[in-house]
Length: 518
Image 1 (spheres, rainbow, N blue to C red):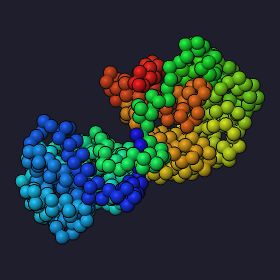
Image 2 (cartoon, rainbow, N blue to C red):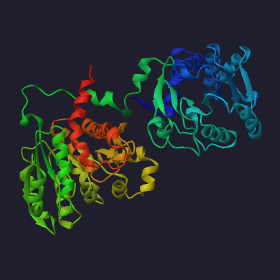
Image 3 (cartoon, rainbow, N blue to C red):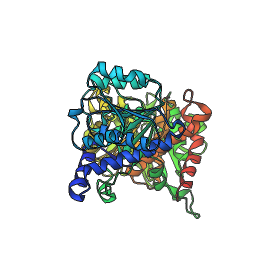
Image 4 (tube, rainbow, N blue to C red):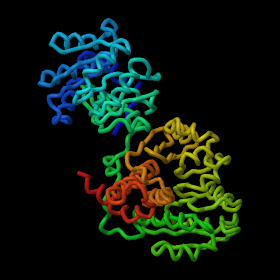
């Protein structure tokens, strides 16, 4: 699903009005009519209301006036409360306010907090609340009458329909500007916005539907795919049924450099994740002291014992890794690697020299910290998969700073270092080297357990080994990983799910996605 920033949406509106000649008042009519129809369909059991429309002084309020009028024409009982004096309503919104009033709509103006509270008292019995307060133009913290209205909506325990975006959510970042409406359904116009997909705002949107308002398709397409909410349609488009004459050599050989004493589970989960994601062959290169343990854990994967020191890789193991990557299609580095000097030296040398597509996770990332110049020495595609703590170590920023602007942090790093950056977390963000962003839509809090990242490394490594470009393998791997967990949620719940639970579900998840292709 395409995602736009608030600025991109404003530019689309401007071009439609000025270049196409479709007046703003018509766009507002189309938006309100489409939203009203969505309300009628989605909340049909609540008809005929009563409905309370809470409208601001800007264009979001104007959309609300159209919704109020259209619902009223369909027999709904509608009351509109405007959080401003009548004289400050201007432009297209003023036109639709007058049309609503002249058609018999009930409108109350409440420019002060006391007037608003008085107007809300008789509205306690409303069957449905419509939030048309602030819209996508909000950039500052909510206060005054708007804060009172938002708090009242959230306390009312009534179904809420948000017009364009829940009021209080920044449309470009998903940030909550002081306080924000919790919506059950959001009807947005022309295209979804970044704020619908990024947390914390994403958790307040509810069910999201895009309403067409008359902006030409060609203009929407011209905005490109800079930001996408990566979902089932995007994932299915990248998956193909296997050729009937395929064999294990057709589907790639992944070399996994991983493991150390006490951390064999990470290596094993990454290897199993790769096999369950379709890699034809997987070889785990590991320190010699853990080779026997991994050979027992892994039935289908091969193991290769390398020189070790202090229970982890010795720096001298790099010669064996060079020999091992010959004939392989991709390399994954990091799960359970350990943080010894030898392991870090090996990791940096492999990253610098490996000619294969490479995915780096866990201690492979820690080895890179303060040595990011190594990335510029690579010629093959590189994918990094940090969680916020690892991202903080890579960039020298605090975890709080990373979390405050996840999209910006991921994009800046990917562009500066020419890599694909997977910033894990709620709504994992994949940033491509050219600045494009893919925001993952699958997964849930039950995935917050050890080992999940190791399985993800294996999934992405397997896709690379099968020949998929990094810009596709990373977001697809993230989506498959989350979707497998989503499929397990009804049976396992969101507490107690472990990483190995996902392994059995991965093949069925891939198959189900392919089945959705037309």
